[in-house]
Image (cartoon, rainbow, N blue to C red; front, side):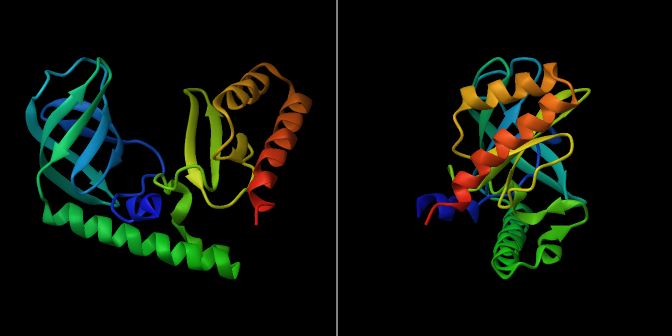
Length: 199
């Protein structure tokens, strides 16, 4: 139940988004009405206070933020109350509810905005659903999904799949030929099937 509540209290990002913490470029991994998790290339000063700026669905967000914990490449922020961010989170929650209903009804076309599956970023859903891993010239990226579809440039596994098994699949994909990649997808489908077979 707690995981379900968290889903509706944050923006559902399909992938990290670019932003700025003050003048420092950052990648935003997760953002809720009260906090955010960011990645950065250079360490940030502990307890620094800046404006976090980013764009989501074409709308600019500027919110005052303070670092509450930091490491050389990742920081957690506390955000001040922001009307724009709260409105966008409400919109995001409505989309997830609409997409879940579309999934239950088998209406996949109602589960898409542009080229993105609405619920593919249900990041607060704990170990339910699936994780889609895709590989390009820049390396691997992942996104959450409620559908087990296998992508052409990677594979989809159950969200609860152990990380060592995921790493094995990634290595097989990277080092293999087309047949090895086909086998990787088959193994991934077995993982995804474990979700579908649960009562």
